[in-house]
Length: 237
Ligand SMILES: C[S@@+](CC[C@H](N)C(=O)[O-])C[C@H]1O[C@@H](n2cnc3c(N)ncnc32)[C@H](O)[C@@H]1O
Image (cartoon, rainbow, N blue to C red; front, side):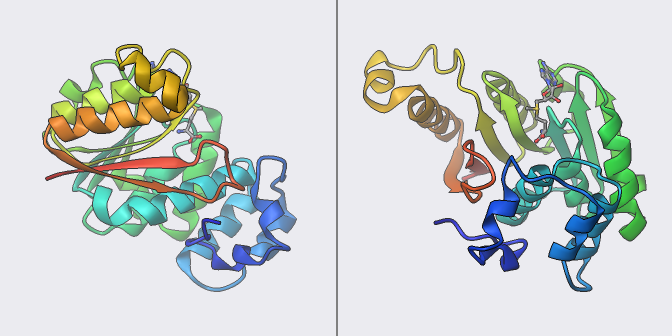
């Protein structure tokens, strides 16, 4: 069982069911994040505003905790960012991150609520975050060289477009893929048959990144949060 690292009190089996997709967020959820630490204060601010479903809070924090040391860079981009919480966490907690570009084809209302919640406890995030409404296709050429790429649940082949962006910038990458529809179309058929599309896709992505000079590691967030819990972390070898 993968342990919770960001909010360790949720390793209590009685609390783990509160972390999944069926759990609801409301101001009372704040009671599950006791303490004076910045993560707990930010989680309570998100609960108070009902900013995002509670599953998203766990997903972003647990992804961040597992990737922050290897994925951080002065310039970062959170691609297919949706509510943007994951990128905003890098802006809040990582001093050496100067700017996080949040990219999505449309800006959601939940992003403003998320930013307001995080900024209530970490006001410096406001100056570090920019939102770019555009497609992820070709976005690497619009980002500064060395920009680190993070992408949480960029659907299907969009994760591959995020890898394209990372290869264009040359920065580190941390990707938690989802829905493998039509992915790995160019992978060996034997791999797809033997491993299934999901594993074959991520194996194929791993070889692609290693061939481009990256060292790839696989990690995961706790499975209670999401079925799509695998993380690919790629750092230049
Ligand atoms: C499953 S959501 C994930 C959102 C967020 N990263 C999260 O963890 O909750 C996928 C997001 O990708 C965005 N998206 C879909 N196609 C896109 C594209 N071609 N370029 C940029 N964003 C896209 C959608 O608008 C949506 O916000």
